Amino acid sequence: MPENTRSFFDKLLLFVKGVGMGAANKVPGVSGGLVAFVTGFYEELIYSLQKINRKAFKLLLNGRFKSFYQYVNGRFLLLIFAGSTFSYFSVSRVLDFLIQNYELYVWATFFGMILGSIYYVAKDFNDFSKTNLITMAIGVAIGVSISFMSPAKENDNLWFVFFCGIVGVSGMTLPGLSGSFILILMGNYVLLLVDAVNELYKTLADIFTGNFDFVKDTVRMRYMKIVASFGLGSIFGLVITSHILGFLLKRYHQIITALIIGFIGGSLGIVWPWKFTIFKKENGVIQYDSLGNEIVENYERYLPSMSDPTTWYAFFYILLGIAILLVLDRMGRDKIKTA
Image 1 (cartoon, rainbow, N blue to C red):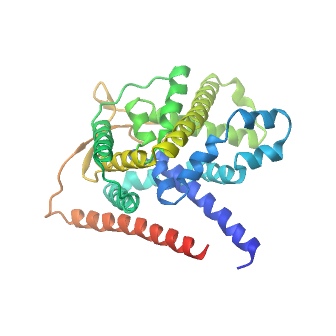
Image 2 (image 1 turned 180 degrees about the vertical axis):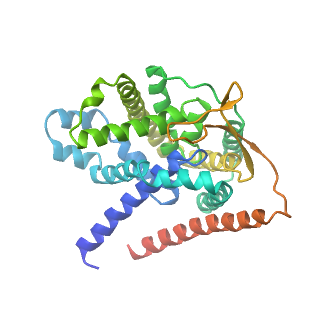
Image 3 (image 1 turned 90 degrees about the horizontal axis):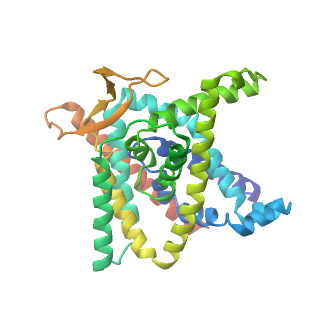
């Protein structure tokens, strides 16, 4: 294959991986960091974000844009985050539709993918020391306890929204920890990942058509402040957590891997396919988001009935999810062999 063609497909693949990460970040219970981990760019993501430091800002302030772009691994970050952003306005909406209409089978597929990812992460992990086993248990305990926490009420205070950005971005940097589910627990999932995204979409469409009347709309401008606060918090959180994780991965790689395995295992409780959705109610009336969808507050899990045909269909989708991860693993090994 010609070098320029190979380069194009490498760029396209990175963009597609970004799309996958962005879609996963929006689904409660699924971690974008998990997608990064199993598709082989997690550590590059962490170390690239770690390059956003004092030296990078110095290059930027001095007008050395090309040096800045190369120093922070700009092509990689640009393609990944372009894919994630694109996903928020496209693929994630398809996932919203699928969850609304085929909820059991979507969760079953995610459950299988997480099962497969545990194999993916654990297959090369051969240090089952007492310390690492305890660390895994801690990761599992945290993941399970998070899945049974009760959500808080919505809060649009801009400082709290900024903090939500810091915490919510954890799903991109820590595999197994779902940032979107954390936002549900913090009470701001609908505000930040549904309503604010829709208002941002409308605003961008208005700007594109040259209509700036939205600046007089106090509700729209309030949402833009929320988007800005959440975005700044997410950027701040990405940079800070990447520096912390980069430091820890270099010095305590096995312990951090053990913790990630634990987190992923614990997250199985969040994506357990057989559950009743508990919708948000006020005075006994179900509340709806700006798209007309019921607002999810939490889930009540139950054991499946073996006499129900849908249970067996769900098992098929669990196997499909496992197969997807095994195929990704095989593709990754084949790429290493041909590199």
